[in-house]
Length: 185
Image (tube, rainbow, N blue to C red; front, side, top):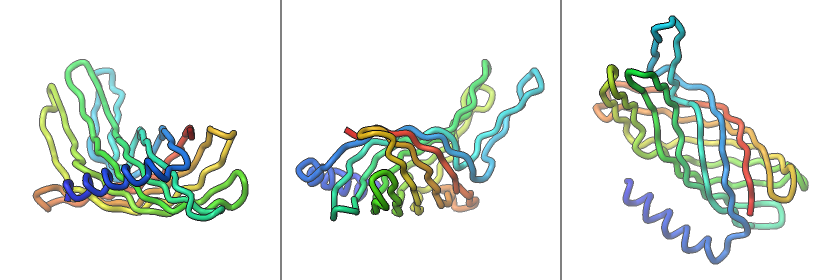
């Protein structure tokens, strides 16, 4: 499946390089999903990692379909992390997204699409050393973007996705809501 997605993205990349209307880079903050890990620090405070969190970075291309619609293809990285002096825990995955966006007017657009999360894993080091690998997962995304200027925008993204451990013994809800900030160029 990973090779198929890689070849699909490379092919789309070659096609979109010729027909691209604009490229974008984007950062986001996300919240939601099941709790994967929790850490209590020596000072009594605690922190948790959730399957829908926390930080994302994406880059991709928008292709005009009609005057009011665009196809968006994106590649990204999404992760949540807890770091302490004696160890760390991280949940991370690579993302491939394909969405159809419709422009409601000159500043608002709505999109719906699919997302593929590749190599999701919960990894620990130090006193929490270990790794739990999850199968690649497919989900849905819905997004609303507001154009701030000719190049900058912010958006809200909802993701619906479930993760399953490689062994198949555990399923985890990775649904999330996120706020995005991006630049088109």
